[in-house]
Amino acid sequence: MSISVAEKRARFRRLHESGCFVLPNPWDIGSAKMLQQLGFKALASTSAGFAWSIGRADNKVTCDDVIAHLTELCAATDLPVNADFEGGFANEPDKVAANVTRGIATGVAGLSIEDSTGDKAQPLYDIKLATERIRASRAAIDASGSDVMLVGRCESFFVGSGDLKDVVTRLVAYAEAGADCLYAPGIRTKEQITEVIKAVHPKPVNVLVGWPGPSVGELAELGVRRISIGGALARVAWGGVMRAAKEIAEQGTFAAFADGYPGGELNKLFAE
Image 1 (tube, rainbow, N blue to C red):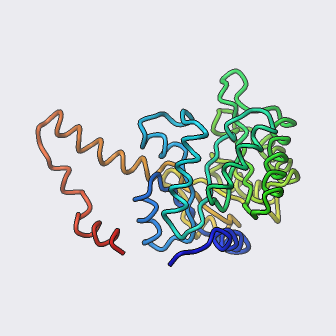
Image 2 (image 1 turned 30 degrees about the horizontal axis):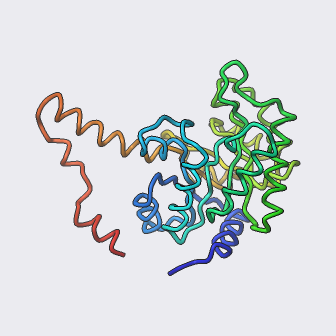
């Protein structure tokens, strides 16, 4: 079955209207196809997972790299894809908007813009500039007529601040600037999640689960609309490879191969 880009986008937007869904994060074509076969309704790219797959550290890939990657992912699956577009690969709002326009052309159904700078001395953009970057991204999407969902991300918990009041202030500002969905990776407790959801209501909230934590049902009860897992699946995959390779290199044994997924099953999965 081949689904048009417009239909993928329409389906993605409908997923945000009610209930709670998991948005797993493939890092290449194979993992995207696997997740589609397992019955997920949408996917999201992972900046970390993709970077590791090409031998780089997270946040050390170029806009060109990501554009090519997103184009491949979107073409490989009938599911809507939400793009981890990092900080838009630029500082100035107009340049972020230009890159968002490039991102839209890949066929994505959603696209996130975060407010981290990569500068340890000033890890977050000033809220005024951060909001202008969201507003410019919104304008780029509207100008394209594409109905791509814009996700406003506050990275406060990821850069060491952990100030929930600042997170809420920023997310509300991003919502008012045109973000369709709000996301603060790193919030974990019931109280934190509930406060964010209440602050930006009725807009949907994305919660990251990258560690053993609450179930889908528990997060749904809190009012979480969507759950993403970032680079967690990629880390699990790398964990298996690393443990097996270390065993061979250090012990000269191959016991870890017992945990491998059967090759015949993988061939069947990708033949469908």
